[in-house]
Amino acid sequence: MNTAKWILRIAVAGEFIGHGVFALQGKPQWIEWFSIFGVSDAGLAAKLLFLVGLLDVALALLILLKPVRLALLWMAFWGFWTALLRPIVGDPIWDLVERSANWGAPLALLLLVGWPKNLKEWFK
Image (tube, rainbow, N blue to C red; front, side, top):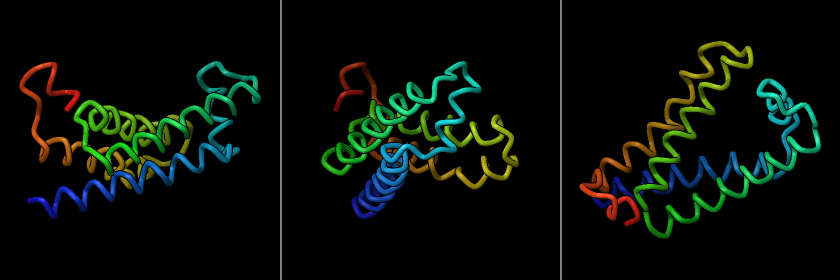
């Protein structure tokens, strides 16, 4: 069980570091996607994307140090949202399917760590 947790921690961290670095670099395609949600100023979109990248990398490092449940829940949500975003912006539905691990790995790790029984456990 411990080995599986470590494999998932490394996989989740790798996925979020990879996407986080793309965001920090200001991936042009991702900046364009902000306009779909009303952010037409490319400069503002680039700044927002940079903040998203910082958060992704910070969460990846946190998960390597300690798999905090609330962080894992957010990562599962964010991984699903960013996968779902692909068909929303016009990519094929298979781009969503291909990215199932982006939300599945953090969710699996959360379940292995243990679903919290109370509010305090979300922060452990």
